[in-house]
Each structure stands twice: as structure tokens, then as C-alpha cells.
Length: 216
Image 1 (cartoon, one colour):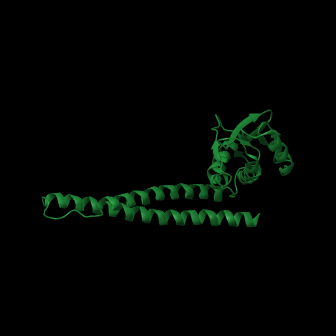
Image 2 (tube, one colour; image 1 turned 45 degrees about the horizontal axis):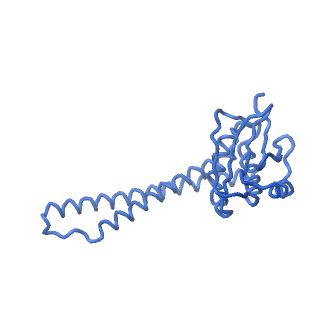
Image 3 (spheres, one colour; image 1 turned 90 degrees about the vertical axis):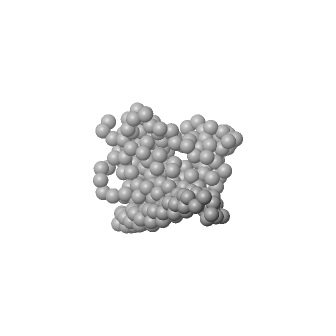
């Protein structure tokens, strides 16, 4: 438990520091864009006596690329921070819809390695599990990694679908194109569930990760 809290705290701190780095880059690239704009205005004012900066358009393109990557980096930092704070002391419940969205955003690279896309269905309502967020995240990541090698069909698409059953909330991790052979192989590759925390079972095209519903 102490190791878990340490890693969570470090992840949250690193994400905060990275956000500060990205903010500095964003400010500097924005300032460069302002200077380029002023240089073009001065060029126009001089009625052509001052030649236009030769690489103006290329510099603007580079600045736009930097800004786009800063936005991407800030999104990664937000997800890293959420992952880090998942180990904080707090309520012993977690929303499986929120957990599915977080894992879906973090596992994109793993899906690409298997030449698959990853999508997450929106939960229509809060789906509270009687488990800590870190337990839901680690269990779901384990299931996703187990299903990905068996994901077939074209296009290869893995879908995380949160839902509610009788006394439980769940996340189905399914691949519509999975063949029967793939499902049989997947059944033999699945990790065991954890009694009192979650169960793992085969459903059509994939796996259902289920938790007791909190408050019911």
C-alpha cells in the first residue's frame, strides 16, 4: 500500500511539473507568433520597402504544430494526474464509467501496437462500484491487455462499454470481429478475478469485468 501511494504521489507531482513546462512553451510560442504578426504589419506599413520575412509562413506552421503538441501534452498530464490521485485515501467507491474513460485514454498506444482502435461508450448515469478507483483501473487495464491480442476483424476495434446488471456494475471489453477461436483462446488467457472486489467472465466478443454495486 505504501508503494502504491508513493507512485501515485510521484505521478501527480510529475504531471504538475510537466504542466508548468508546457505552459512556458505555450507562452513562448505564442509570443513568437505575436512577433511574426507584428513583423508582417511593419512590412505592410513600409509599402514594400522592407522585404517580408522569407520564412514567415513556415514559422507560423511550426508555431501551430508546437501549440497543438502543447495541447496534447496538457491532456496527457491531466490523465496522468487523475491516475496519480487514484491512489489517494478517499471513498471506497469508484464510477466505472469514469474509470473506463481514463483507461481508454491511457491505453491508446497499447491498442495501436495491436493495430486496433479503442473506443469508450458513454455511461448514461453514474455507475458506482464498491471498489477503489485504483482497483478498478488496474483490473480493467489487465483485461484490456488480455483481450487486445485476440481482437480480430476489420477494422480492429476494441470497445469499453460500462453498464449495470443485477446488483452489479460492469465494463464489457469487447471486439465485434472476434472469431470463436479467438474467444476460446481468450478464455484460457484471462486472469482470475479477486473475490469480494471483482469478477471476470466471458461475454460475446470479449470479457465482462464486474463489481458489486455500491449502495445496493
